[in-house]
Image (cartoon, rainbow, N blue to C red):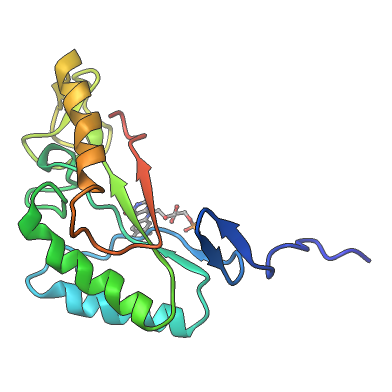
Length: 169
Ligand SMILES: Cc1cc2nc3c(=O)[nH]c(=O)nc-3n(C[C@H](O)[C@H](O)[C@H](O)COP(=O)(O)O)c2cc1C
């Protein structure tokens, strides 16, 4: 009988990275991303997953700008002073022999704060906030923010980056 997932436990090369297998920990925001000093707890949390055998860890969503954060003061990566706390996490995973992709996620109309933006000013069913409508130049700026977030000279050393903006962004 053929194995139902014959490639699952075989290595996967993506660009310059070779994962030991294809069992990946999906992105899961924990709340530690915003907690004072939470990066150390988050690093320990992910290192446990490396020890458990995760082939690749995708971090919880980090917004490319403040508008796209999940909540007020939610994790984002739009200025250099925010880099060190992300680096604590990615370095710990790499030091433990694991692989980590930093997820850049724009929350769009699901951002639970007064600066939320979306293509149309339509409130998400689970949100109390109605987003501000993005102008054409806002869209261009948001695309630039995604590019900037992953191009700091001393950005966190990640195995990969994952970008997504599906949430009515
Ligand atoms: C507490 C929690 C936080 C999550 N945070 C994120 C996130 O930051 N980014 C994301 O893309 N998905 C996030 N997800 C979605 C998960 O990655 C996953 O897609 C979802 O839980 C469905 O997979 P499952 O059926 O295995 O639970 C989150 C899910 C949970 C339960």
